[in-house]
Image 1 (cartoon, rainbow, N blue to C red):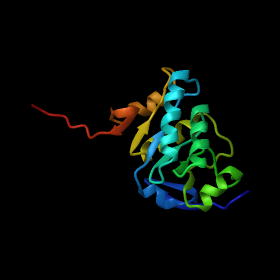
Image 2 (tube, rainbow, N blue to C red):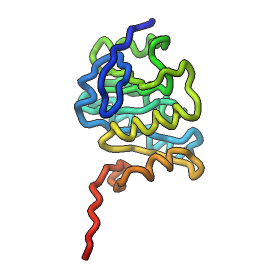
Image 3 (cartoon, rainbow, N blue to C red):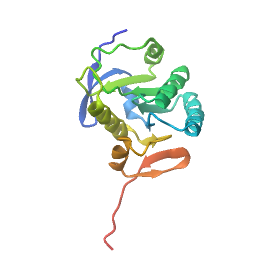
Image 4 (tube, rainbow, N blue to C red):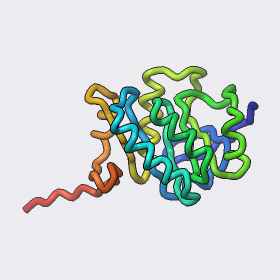
Length: 177
């Protein structure tokens, strides 16, 4: 099903949006996981995804592109959590999957994209991941491989590792003493 996106201001970017834009104004957890992920990390992440899915107050933002991220999306769609999907391509010609329609209708989903490209590529994927990191208040990363471009994004944002691999932004203060 095709839905016409609207244009909204999102941070310093103009983006196309479909769904509940009010989700952007709330606390969001960004999800990143490399395509190749050890089984133990998948199991740990799956337990967290089940908890998220049951929480109607939580908002997860991601590209939902890697296999682990896709599995998370399936659980979130079946549950009560709020979802912000950031595809690495334009929305004008994007088909809305029937699995997404209920979450959109219930106001639990937002799809946003700043892109004009009809197909995702390495550059738009990297830029999409930057957008997710910028919009998220916290990041959850079950596994990031050493050679992943995600490491470049993580390096751009001062963070602290917290409980359950939740990473929060921190203000860095440098003392001149």
